[in-house]
Length: 451
Image (tube, rainbow, N blue to C red; front, side):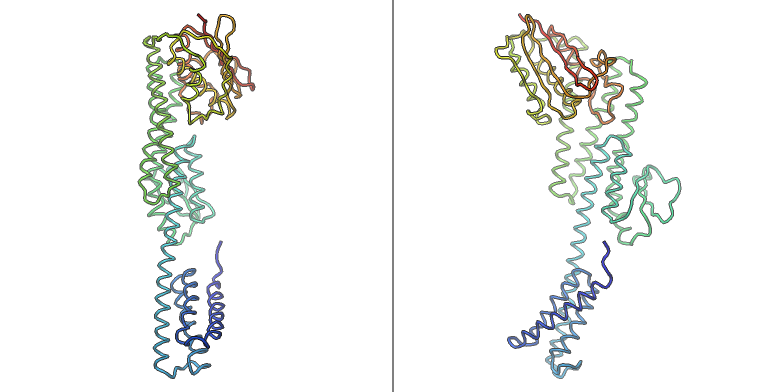
């Protein structure tokens, strides 16, 4: 919101009038020359709000009023005593110094505000460009934040150079011309300098990483369409090119941003949390790749022992914490479940993958895990409340790297979890199947023969 150009004049006149009245009231209890400090308060307020020039102008007007109303002979602009002249000049000098100090404090406060806004902008840009599904969505969100930070009606981030130069617009290349920031013109010189010297350089690192990330996403989509029937080696290479690089890119970029001295504690905590989350995601992906490679190589021989299914399911739920709080996964286990002959570690990984899959596709709704003995078999059901699985896909979801033809573009799964579930369950003598109707969630049923 723009301030009225008459605001400093109105405030100065009103303040000086008030100060004059206060001095009249105090002149009976204090020397007149010592009461000039009352006018300094008005000078300080004006200089703080409107800068050095306004403060000096208020100081001059205050000196005139001080002389006219309070320094003998009053009611005139003449000064009869050299002592009073020195006092008035001292007042002017002090008022000017106060204006200068207030201007410096004002400038530093504005600079601190700009730095904070730019740190917020960098953090928002990192989240939008590196954490979003597609680059174009992140560009629009970042441009909106730039417009807010600069108090402009609009802003636009365009990949490459704009096709035509818009009328009354200022263009700023970002990242060696990889993107262009378009702002409405004319801009004030201070705003133009701020954009060129601070905002554009801060965007370059984030934008370069985001463009590389988007290119990798496009490569993955193209590779998936062309090589869906390739063997495991090609599929693993595809996963490594995307699912490993994406968290690494986010971790490196967030780590670089943490070195900025302009970040506050909240932004540092957000970036630190992003690094930890991406590191955990990377660890889970590597574990899945290793599990699948062992299964495909026939090296996942189970270490069979007598195990407690309730303990295995509880451990599997705890493995997903803190990404999946305990209240999101409900265990409904029959009492006195008989022991099972199987590999506890492999089944824990299998059930953890089932629970993680149910949470990912359950729309944030709780997941129910039920276990009971039915005749000669142990039956475990993992039930979610998601959109369900179409009949035509139910036989394909256990294929490595399969994510569904209508998978959301924001999905971050690698397509390995259910393949690992089938491998570990079958290695331990069990079976796994899915029961689902569109719109009614999905139920994964795992069965084992009891001793």
